[in-house]
Image (cartoon, rainbow, N blue to C red; front, top):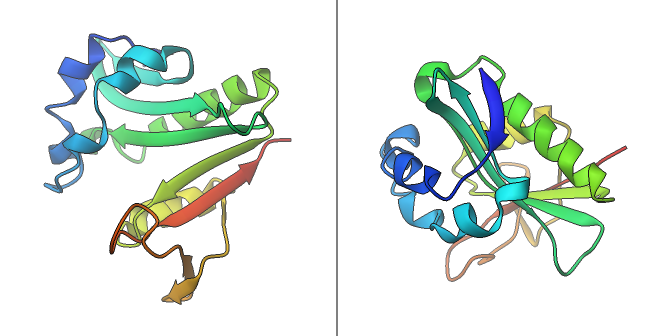
Length: 157
């Protein structure tokens, strides 16, 4: 297994996999090709024998110059629990720190319990929201009407 930077051509390989990797949830539209074209230096692919088994799409904030943002991460269900996601996150953390970024942010849906648990295990903190659901801070309508989100932040070093 090895990690490399994303290429534009990876979009055609990853796009058909996304909904399956998310257990049938309609997620494909959350990752347009622009991420594979414009954020290659900060986005990564994990491969095994030229097969994509994981990816992380992230970027350096253009607004908050001390921050980086992880937009989308996926691991092939057949390869989960092998630390692939952790390795991708670590590569992103190193890249962000190399660009003098001290904070990494990420967002997830309140229904994605796996993501919530995973991010907290990686040391992300949940940012205070405007309401709580099941003792977890939520940001109401963060991505539009009735699209609540959980916001994460992690300090680097």
